[in-house]
Length: 140
Image (tube, rainbow, N blue to C red; front, side, top):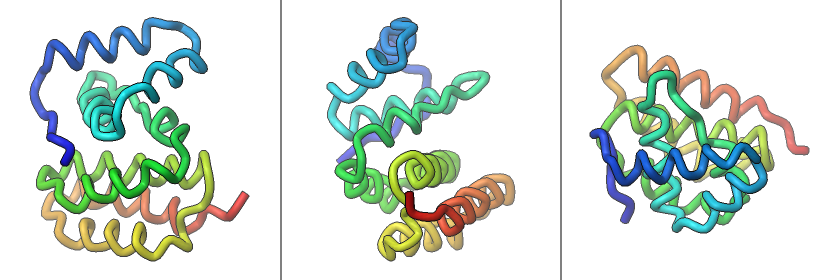
């Protein structure tokens, strides 16, 4: 199971700097994809906590649908609402970048359930916007 990341982590910061320092998106994505899906998700969540946030959702999307089971498992077990919101945002980006997820009943069900459980209105609003993107994105 993937582990959470909510604190400053020097190792994750080095990984992030290493990937983003390549100045070539194709090389950055290639380096990112060398990591396990759990490590990619952890790095994505870590990057989202930077000021300003750095979204690696496109990098996650580059894995195609094969990352979905790990991403959904992480979302299902994630207790931190900010991480939940960011994971749902990554799913929305994936729906735009790769293929529409609106027909994937498991994705929509897990996202809806997590949104219903959210107590923080800011996180809920952001997650609801991402769900709308998922539901409105047409197949490519």
